[in-house]
Amino acid sequence: MISSSSMSLFGLLCGLIVLLMLPFPSRASDPDPLQDVCIADLNATISINGFPCKPASKVTSDDFFTDFSKDPTTFDVFKRAVTFGDVFGFPAVNTQGVSLFRLDLDVGGINPPHTHPRGTEAGIVTRGTLLVGLVTTNNTFFSKVLTPGMVFLIPRALVHFQLNVGKEPATFIPIFNTQNPGVSDSIGTMFDTTPPVPNEVLTKSFRVGDDVINAIRAARAQSS
Image (tube, rainbow, N blue to C red):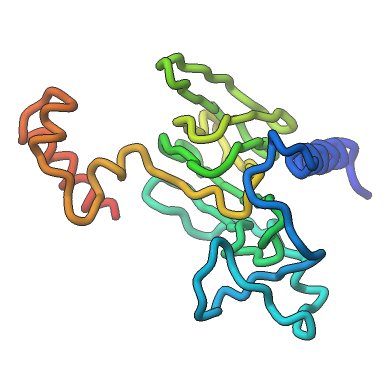
C-alpha cells in the first residue's frame, strides 16, 4: 500500500514538472520542439544545438522511462552522488525543454557552490534535512533548512549550494526548464582550468599571497 506521505511527495514532484513545462515563452529556456518525439542520438557524428533525433523506427517504450529508485553505493569527495536525467542520462528529454536529476548527499555531504548557466532549478527534498542557500547578484544571501516535501527555487545562473545538515543521508530531485542546464563550479572555474588561471589574477582578486593560491590548487588536485 502506498503511504499518504509518498503520494504527497509524488504529487509535489508532478506539480513541479508541470510548472516547468508550461508553454509560456517567458519561462522557456530551450527552443520549442518541431515534432512529438526526438530521442537524442548521442552517438551522432554531426554537431548541432542539441542532438539529432534517433530514427523513429528505433524508438521503443523504454526510451521514455528512467529509474531514480536506486540508492547510490558510492559517493565523491563531497559525499555526493548524482543520477543524471538530462539529455545525456535520459535522451528522451531532447528538444522537450526539461530535465531532472537525483542528488544524494551522505551525512555531512555538500553540493558545493555552483551555477546553472542555462536553466532555472526547482527542487523537492524527498529524504533527510537539507540546507539550501543562494546568492543574488547584489550579494544577498538567502537560505532555509528543508525537510521532505519542501520545495526550493534557484533562479537561472545564480550561485547556490545544498548541504546535508541532518543525521541521515539526504535526497532531493532538482528539475530544470532545459534539457541541458550545464553546471559551473564556482571554485573550479578559478582553480581547475586548463591552462591554469594565472596566480597573479587570483592573488589580486582574493587579496592573498601565492602560498594560499598554491595550497588551494594542491588541495583541489588531491580531491579530484
